[in-house]
Length: 279
Image (tube, rainbow, N blue to C red):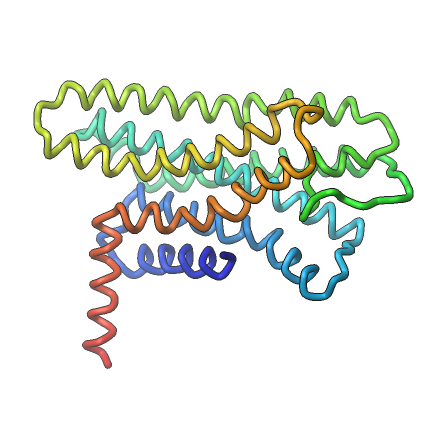
């Protein structure tokens, strides 16, 4: 599954770089999403595979905090990229004549850079708050990676501030982005209903369906872990849900976007044909 995730996302990034027809805002964000997925899984899965092979599931305190920092960073990166992609589809469908002027290259780069800055600050805040806690002697993490929810359960000191910040920041980092995506698609559906052409409606739903599939998989599992009270979630349940958004979702993203996307199929055929001709 990890190899599939790496190869699938690398293929998307390479195709977008090689095919000039894919040098558009939508595919710019898609390439960043693929890169984020690639790093997201690489933060946790290689370590898990190493533990399984060596039968030594230990990790140092510094490495644990480092893993948690980058895990949160790339998880939030995917979160914000899904919002930006929803906005891109909203502008393309609701304001097609102004799409080029609104979604300028400068704006696209600025949106990605701003999301990186906010995610760095958010991840650093949680890492520093966790670093101030003291832990019990028997530090066995009931998880396959250093997740903040699992680490807080091991703390011997007061974790009220940590839990408070998780719920406070869940608004701007989970609830608000998810709400913006829902609002964007409500506007898109309203615009689609005004169109009489069945061909155009099918094309719009085909384009947006891929994004909605990824959104449903990602937010459904993340909300289940971080916004539901931890007392109601068993360790096994949390681990299974975490596997869904750390392994399954990044693996399915390339298939969802490539198999349902005509432009990606054309780009792949074009690149393969050029390679055969050169040979």
